Length: 246
Image (cartoon, rainbow, N blue to C red; front, side, top):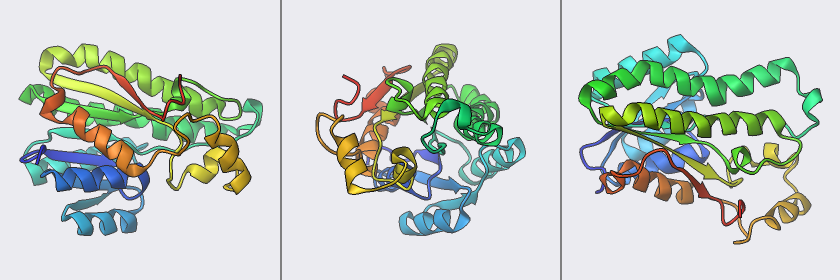
């Protein structure tokens, strides 16, 4: 019960890494808002963990503001914010990515972090406590061809994490990031281009531990960084990658 009495918002909580984090946080005693653009998915996870489902588009300021108000009205306070919602474009030469795809990737992966900070950081600063965790990627640390603008958006998240950590430290708010390698999530096929045994084998050859990351891997790391056990840790971008970035 390492999060007993804590409250949390997990964006993109209806599937993949986000769902794994929601499950683990609830099991450790937290009250969790499962926020997702897919309300059916959010409700499924929320019902499973006895949490709260909320429909949000993290790229839209008004939607994020409504989510923030709902969480604070329901919980009374917010201890943990997980910026997990994310998308990618399909692997292709950088010049072939359309303007619409580029804008959407940056809006969901980068603008969302700005928006949640805009609407929730003042509350945390007032309480002089809080933990923010941004789900970045090994793509932001060790990029590979074909995912150029996705890589860039995740690199942005790493830099945002560090500057947020420096600015918010005097207010008692910690900010960290996780950098997972490709995982067994709905986005895997998009990262690989196509989910085939051949593509999986090719990618797994780049991971020393020889497997993809899982929602449980991310949930365990997130639990530590958002718990009081990590009270001296801020501004880190922790690789959960089986050695991919070595």
